[in-house]
Image (tube, rainbow over all chains, first blue to last red):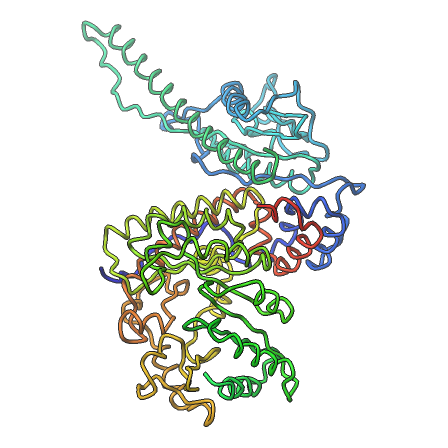
Length: 272
Length: 354
């Protein structure tokens, strides 16, 4: 057996004390269960942490701050549409994602409570697509969009927002002025989580995003003029659809991984 | 050790200028000489200089009884006990001189200790032949109510690839237990993982917790000779490791020589990117395993890397969950006080009852 130095290593994925010192509210937002139950202990925690007691005292008038899950990194969350040079990923629709979200959360006893209410105080400066636009300049109009989570369990105050391409512009995604539109859905999930963290209250919130798995399809389009051209085109189209379906399945699996982490986080919060 | 030598040790400690000096009785078995302990504690409590001391006894538990525990409570003496976990692990190496096992004798004593002093530390030593029981042993001890568990490897044992593979699996299980207990809001201290988490979280401050040979603590043998650490006592007073005695004081040149040797860059660690998080600075451990204070045992090297991987997995997982107990335990400097306040407010709460 030999001593072998570590030549390269990844930085651990949890912060140092100095990192946390830059965000002192982190400790105030996350109090151990036993401390939350005791107003005296919460007050002592605040005093020792050098913070005010209002945010720590259960039942204070302004309500408890929102508990916001980190963004769980499964899938790039990036993709583009437009020019023929672009190979788009298989974007998931809101409905497809909600199906996965509902299934996974139902396994842990969560039920969607009909139409979710908008999260109070959380709005985004974004854009809305104008379907009746005549000119390019008219196709988007500025809007202030409230955040209405895609999934909300009222009994346990758990809200989930799935960031899809449909959310991209309303939630502040950048509009391209070229023939290719890029989407940074993970980036929007981060900003949604940040907004809820800053302005939200009384909810356990998770922002998930479309993992945007790549379509793996490398089949040449049939050459025209062959005897079986029509059949070959149909076969090509079938393979293309299969490749998109496979990518969507991969995206759904990555979304399940995000949900798995979210459920673990909820366990850590004592919600489960 | 005579009472006179013991008193000279306390006198020497009083000259350090520390507000409160720590005196640890260990051996051998310190409870074989409990009258000496009583004498020295009494001397410390009424020391002519007014110096304050805090005392600790590390025992194998055989002679631990209600009388000593009552005394320890009256005089605020911490008691730590060695216990290796489940019977299959404990009885392999912890035997009476006649070869009979000690598990059945020591288990009630451990329970007695925990009922009297619930925060007592328990020391567990892991050998290649007991490593398959490591996670079970930790779970077993936690089940008994142990909150402070110090798990150490016997670095001098014949570790090989096969036993290390078992150790790796067991350490992963310890990581799983750590996550599980933290999620359950259960308070505990599990030494190897806490230390490795701290080595990242506390960055440069972690160096304060690392061993500095002959600097912050000394070991005294029964004749009053001084050594940089307990491992060196067996080298004897004629060895280069003896750095004075309680009558003539510390030989500063010997102390500095040892410090300088220990602080030398370890050749095998020169290019290592995680050396700042490693226990490679423990000179006595290096000396025990390699015969020199500035060469690192391959066993230590492998184990430290293994622990870092597990600790980082645990840290990543619990941080991503924003687990409140994890955050406060590791990032809130006031956590020990707040935790004690919580326990005092609710001694029969869910944590204490586990």
